[in-house]
Image (cartoon, rainbow, N blue to C red; front, side):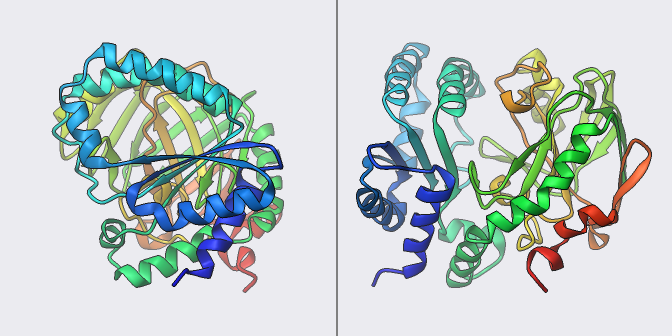
Length: 371
């Protein structure tokens, strides 16, 4: 029996996230276990008069291919993918995670080559196509979240279909404030960090690129970051999850990185020069996401959180940093996670995860949920 909530989600993805119209070419890219949602998307795309195209992936095959892959293979694939993205208007990426650690035995050099060679492809679709990325409810994700599969399905479908129009209206004052801000200070247990965001645009995210969504992001002036940040959530990257991550900065550069796997985290940060600089600073705002589950698409949207991201900056909020890495790391500042404050130009704007300025109180969970 088809779940009517998947039909509603498919409509939201096509109409809100990628704004599909009659005659648009829409690529639907999913894992084999995301078939129920892919079917709904194909049906709804045809209803709109759009032209859907399908790509189905499999982790076992991808892993086996990558184990002995060569640079020449990636270069060939990059040529094919670039041409394909040039031929379409919108891309929907659906992740059906079965094993988060499936790629942990892939050599680091393979990831480096993949990131280097495929970067122009990612740059193209990010900046020229309408695109969205979302997770499908799988047993693996349910296990991460500490929920039964059925409960997680309900959670995911509820979280993914929040009122993003209302959220966008509530975000507008925060964007305006960030656009006018120079100095930022973040204080939490193990964290005292300062940087500037002067002259770098703030960007609102409300279901157009990610589902679930809910963040406003910018980037620090590249050489302005000083101090230490200690993250209190798991930090997954390419199949490995790092914990107790702490980064210390001097004039923008990470000069010390500590974690439960210190040697490995430093190997990643040494991939290229830009990996030791920050490409994104964002505030998480989704009122229905409360706790980390080790999946960044959810964790970076936790209400009362922030993420501070080593690696490449997005074009919309560009601080000039270039890297093959973009690693979102999340700090939750709600009281049950140790609390914390954010200051803009020495003015307290958020304490223990709740906004304290009247013009920003509409972003607190009770307001967004209408309670």
